[in-house]
Image 1 (tube, rainbow, N blue to C red):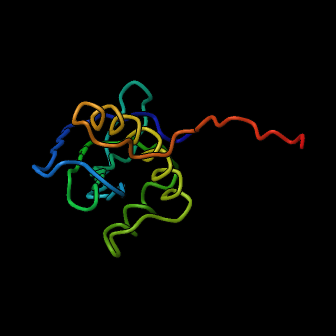
Image 2 (cartoon, helix red, strand yellow):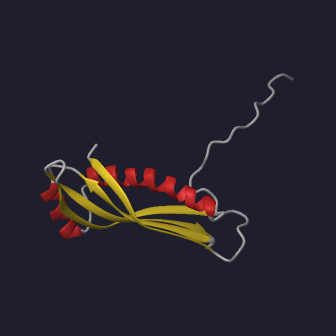
Image 3 (cartoon, rainbow, N blue to C red):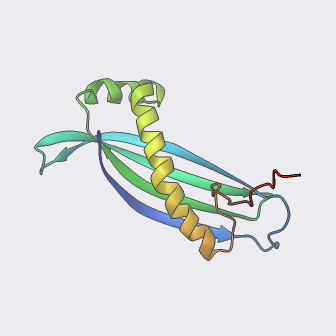
Length: 137
């Protein structure tokens, strides 16, 4: 896997004054803020440091959780990715899919813990066990 590190730099959670009632929706979105090349001395290689924000907002406006951090991405295509970032502020599709999926997995787990502390609903659906239907009539 080309992702070799993740560090959280900022974590912020807020709960609104209004009571949490009714149908709430949690919308989560990662945002890539910056991409730069860095040395990784232990590997004797260069990697891409990708700064991100991961925001989860609860609607209707009852709270939010924001995580800021940095992900290290190891690839042979540093120049190509840096050029595309400088030109269009976007990543190639293959790198973008890998990075965004990784951020969703790692950040949603962190957001779930923070949401519990703030007494907000979990930002992801949990499996529910329901009783079996009685098929005999």
